[in-house]
Amino acid sequence: MGLFKSDLYRSFGIGFLIGALMVGASLAPSLTADIATPAKAAAVETQAEGTADTL
Figure 1 (cartoon, one colour):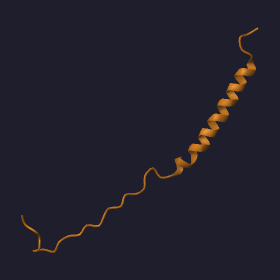
Figure 2 (figure 1 turned 120 degrees about the horizontal axis):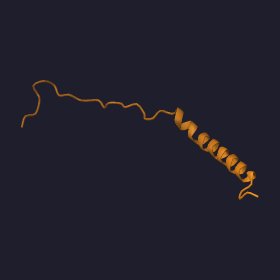
Figure 3 (figure 1 turned 135 degrees about the vertical axis):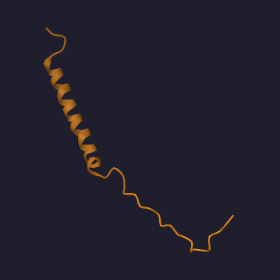
């Protein structure tokens, strides 16, 4: 008589498989999404020549 029956190992294996599938299903949408949104530079306003402020 063994310490554990094979049914226990089978139950753990099935539980692990179901849990891994659930984690994979919850992570799948984030794997196809962009990691970060594209960066957009802000518009820069320049002063006309000859009107620059001096210290």
